Structures are given as structure tokens and as C-alpha cells.
Amino acid sequence: MVRVLLTKPGEVSVAMAPTTQYEDQLCRAGYGNIAGIDEAGRGCWAGPVVAAAVVLPREVLTQPMCLADVDDSKRLNAHQRETMYAQIYALATGIGLGIVPAYLIDTMGIVPATRLAMMIALLSLPCQVDALLIDALVLPGLSLWQRSLIKGDASCLSIAAASIVAKVSRDHLLCTADSAYPGYGFALHKGYGTVAHQRALRRLGPCAFHRWTFRPVTALCYPELEAQE
Image (tube, rainbow, N blue to C red; front, side):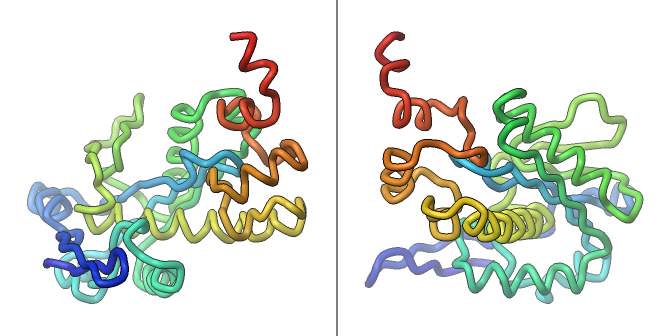
């Protein structure tokens, strides 16, 4: 299905909506429950990385129009994501979440922390899984069949659903953090490196919610360390 996207005022772009082609192949090969896995917050300067694992039932995979508006979370606005989030929860066989906080990201590095969040999401599922479709990464050491799809959130319905669940869940956490750490504007920029976030960091310095080892945070708050390199 082709989807028309509004970009700038007066401009539109055309993109293919996610399909069930990968899930259909696995179903025909005899696999049962298939989990789509994606993350949100990997490139942020603050807050956790959040992963979601979503298992869609066979009736949804054979009639994907019931989730026709599900798409890569980056191609949806906040209202659309919230609407689809509720619909995914209503229809999914199972949903698992994995949350890895900033201090562990600083300790482990963002890629291992992202894999850990995905593993936690997978282990949090309330149902058995037979195969995995993962956006961009693989999970080493698992005996489950898995496939990594570059830009899978834009091409695979299960991964797109996971991208929405991860993004909305993380946004909710950042709105809560806005009250715990006032002045940074987490509810607005969600931890990304916006101009407003940069100004807050220069004014207040980093808080416990920030990823202190991320180079942009270090460069803004401790420029003397950058100068020594």
C-alpha cells in the first residue's frame, strides 16, 4: 500500500506502508508466533533506551488492514502514534517492553544497551515466540530464528508496531522525567539534542537522567575536556 506523507507545507512525499511480507514468509514456513522488535531513544542525549517486542495474531497478519495506519513511528505525529499505540495493545497477542536507563548506557555503550533492552522486551512477552524480525540489529546467542531488517520499521508491520509501542512508552517516561528534573524540557524534546536542550544543558549542566558519556553532552558541559583531546 502506498502512503502519501505531508512533509513541509505544500509538499508531499510518497512512501510504501509496512507490509506483512516477512511474516507471511515465516507463516508459510511453519513458524507460529512472530515477534517484531524495535527500539526508541538510541540517539538521545538523555533518558533510557526503550525496546518493544510485539506479536501480532494470525488474523491481523492475514487481514493487515485492521492496522492499516500503523507505520514507522518517525513518520507519524504524536496523536497518530497514541492512537495506533492503543489499537496495537487492543489487537496484539503479546507485547513486551525493555527499558535500560542512562547510567547503564554510559557503562555498557549504546549498542549493547540497545540489545539488552531488546532481550528484556523479548523475555517480557506473555507468549512463546518462534521467530524474530528485528530492526537493524541481531541478538547473538539466541536459538530462535531471527532476521535483521535495515529500516524494518518502514517495511515490516510487526516491527512498525514495535516502533510505535517503544516510542510512545519512552515519550511517557520522558514526560514523567520532566517533573522530576525541571528546567530541561524533557516533555518537549524527549531527550534529543534540540537547541532548547542544548541551552538547558549550558545553563544547568547534566542531571542524573543524562547520558554523561555521550560526546555532545560532554562537549557542551565540559568543553575543557574536549580541548584536551
